[in-house]
Image (tube, rainbow over all chains, first blue to last red; front, side):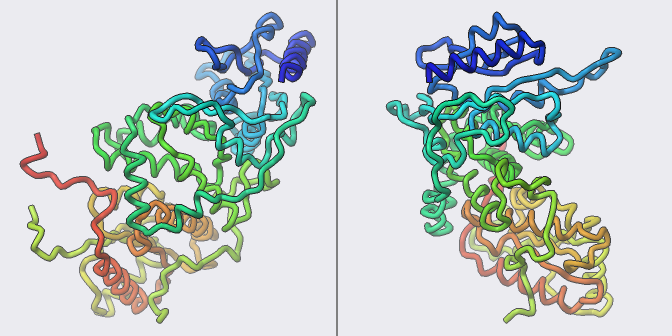
Length: 304
Length: 150
């Protein structure tokens, strides 16, 4: 990992020296021990601060739509910034999703792919555990970035096979048990919106949860509102979620959002054969259709 | 305020597409077909217009069931609105079921403008399904009573 960090710094410096980028999005040492935080290096001197270790859990793709956002009144001759991003496997998947959704111009982006060893679970929430490789990383199917512009060499984790064992176990419970478990998990929520802020897919300028006319989610401290927020936010990830667990890591209450978002990923794969950010589909899964899509869920009143 | 001993009539919110299902409902009415009066129709331009949030919100606001109906695949006024919707609904139905919402509560169907009879029997089926649910409503807000309104 030290070796990777050295090579990554060198690559970032070279980009600045060659004047190829304005910003490198990466990680620097966090203010607490055993932590790293996102960092925007804007010069070769800044690039010296970049780090690479087991605590680089955040999904850096989440910053890109904001960085590429065109100002309301652009100056004459405005050019979008040239940005390089340090990407793990999951960041890379998110980046390719954002490119597909026209949030990030590919021509102005340099992806520095770092083969990922798996990140350590964050010590937050009610259940602070010992350091171990995060569940998202244990179940990761693509620890290396496939279409990186610069690849830092080194061994990454071995890709896991998609199994969705927890999803299948949860689906095996009765409907009432599942609802109780879901509500129990969601009732921990304090509606801080950290899951939304950390998610690379949540780039809407006005989130449905913040909209007031019409008001989809009231700010009232009611369980029903929290459920609507989470159902809405999670379903917006349908066919887009790359299972990076940025939301899980961001959650101060330790809500197990993964159990639910994984279902969407499983359905995307089972129903439409789509693995967001990996399979070479040019259009996001829910923006398209096939003539022979499954109809088994349709109610037919004449059916006996 | 309803007492728990009273038998409450279920309410089903139906999102019907303007071009087929709404016309189908119209035909059922013009043909004087009988179907349960528990359905509340909301006309939408296309089944593709139905945002999953509408469905979640209808359940939150107290609907016992939600039905979304559009043109048969291939008949969409906007060529492919219902085909795109089909994918979205397949994901939504599966996801809601996974979270523990009974599959009978959220239903999807196709009804064309000439199928008044099909519309009537569809409503009958959906209302019967919803009536058959023994579990309480999900997502719905707590009913406002003197005790919890301040």
